Image (cartoon, rainbow, N blue to C red; front, side):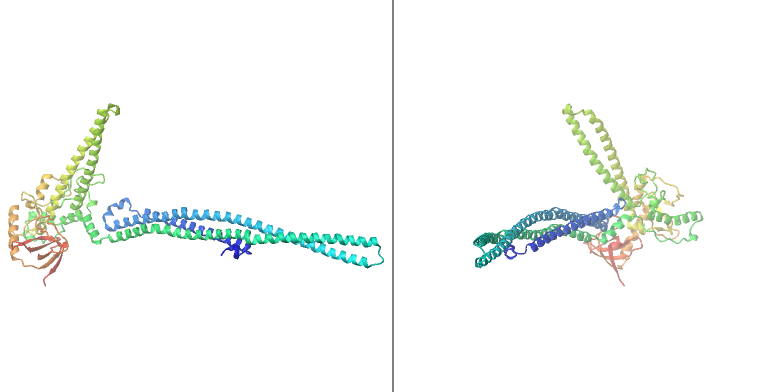
Length: 581
């Protein structure tokens, strides 16, 4: 079915309909343009949101936590999502809006041509109809006049009073009028034939051709809207897999959060490595000599205070009395941030972390400087082989400077490795479970140096420089550092070797005497790195023979392959205990 056949008389309505269709196309273009603006604004605001919530430089230290890492990954996925919205916006702008605009312009031009042709055809038909109407009126007038002339001639011919000349004049008039009527009739017939031919051609050929062109134009517009709507959906579908991957990345980021791991990292970050303060012993003044009274009060008084200071607020203290004379103040140079060069003013665990980071930094600098030196050496060889490329002496100074830098970096690297080795030795000595269990002697907390003499820590607020030799010797478990045995009142203090032998005998006797207090299951694997501890695997069942005394260690034992028992200490936080009723 075609408009030219079915709507041959609806020229005006078709003109209005095609105009409304093009207006609908322009309306869709405006809709897509507004959507592009929304997509662009959405992408811009998403990027601004990501930028505003990017971690600040001062927050970089929190990046080790899984929740913070997940949030950073979330920001990356949101940024990628904003990029996909920008892709949608740009593609809609290039493919849809430009296509709709071009189609609308083409349709308007074609419609204008069609309407101009139709208007011309309509005007030609109206002109021909006017000619026909005029020829018809002339014919009617001439016919009436000829009829009147014939009637006048008949009356004159029957009137006997008129002369022959007058009758002849009426006859000539009649003849002329009849001739005019015949001419008008012929003209009318000719115009009628032309009009019918033109009208038939107009409604059967010319105007239907125009209407069919308008139909094609309207169908082209309708087909264009369909293609543009599908195209817009295809643009959205093309980025849907990437957006889906962004959503998967967000879900993956959320699933990567591990509260247990974050809790462990908090412990790893803030754990000082100092032992917990033990119970304050009772001082029986009747069993303390008067000359040692002041020393005893001093030891038991400020000792815990200094331990708390060293653990809780080490960053706020510039001068700090050492714990058991191990972590004393060190009169070495300070770093840019006010810390000591060997980080000895930090708690043990934090010191080790700082030293490891410094060693890694120096190792990276050594690699970079080595590559730079190798490059300079190659350049010097090339200059020596071909002097036209450059003077080898210009590279000599740079090579000397690079060698000097490398020597300094290697010296610093070796120095910090030494600091780390000392820190590890101190860590092993302090983490020994026995050193935390055997602290009381005659009701006093004391520490012994390798020569067996007691140290009552008379610091009086002054700094004592560290001595590398004394540090290494006092860090060994054999030195009796931070350990003592419990003796009867008045038994006195023996040598360090005697203490060690007494403690071994005490433990050997106690192993045979102690009965299991319950059982425990290992929650995590543990590698024994300190004296008196034993390793265990995850899920292993052990016997509890001594519960945690507040120092974070529990004494356990298990059967070995030699029909004997392995006994030692494990971290209390690594096991789940079930004690007997």
